[in-house]
Length: 301
Image (cartoon, rainbow, N blue to C red; front, top):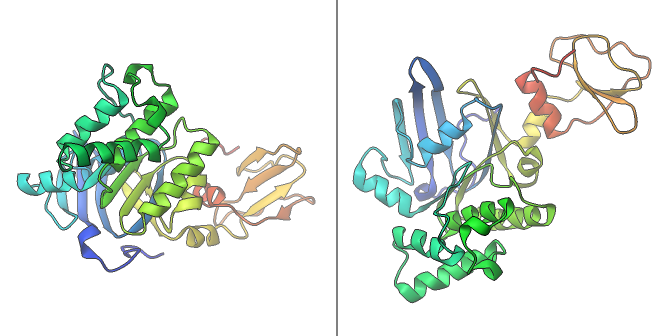
């Protein structure tokens, strides 16, 4: 497990460094001593609901103050007002539930965001807005009011806003919710292109997006990092612990019925293998490995 390893090139300007990060809500610690060092490339952030993913994203986005610990974002200290302003100019952030002024047009909303980010003069700014709309396939809806957009279009509008100015740091919290398969492929292609020079953090429950995009994956549980490494390293931990068999297992293991009537079975570390004459070991997926890592509470029998 490669904890604390920077993925990507040596460029320090794009890096995010977090040391002992704590965020508390009353007596509950949503983040409990997070240490990270992120560089150019796509890092996937996985975890159950309530694991601390969105809280971490909001802290990195300077939208939420930490209770303790230290952060350096794009070489700057977000606790200083002047640094925080500069971080926001150079960062793109798509929150989990983006909210926009409903009476704005698509073009007007993005132009407003571009003004806030101080993206050049009027002509250059409008060119950048048009480019962002085309990148997410919203140019044909540029005159539509935000309130008339579908859920998927609303999500793409949020992504377009995050992409304005080719940010050095791109924080994406559940970015593919509401996207159809074709749009999701376009999203992956776009993010892969940006990640050549930018630091991208992708928080998602869509594990297939992590498999397709990420060179590094972080797993959070109860506000702590429980895995930090490559997707291949996480999958390797699950080898020999994933089976398929023809009958429902009787022991307390995670399992589910497949379309062909067989059962996929995940055996926790240290537990006995399922007792079945029809069992066949199979290559684990990233989803299998993640479920084994987190214990897959709620699916055991």
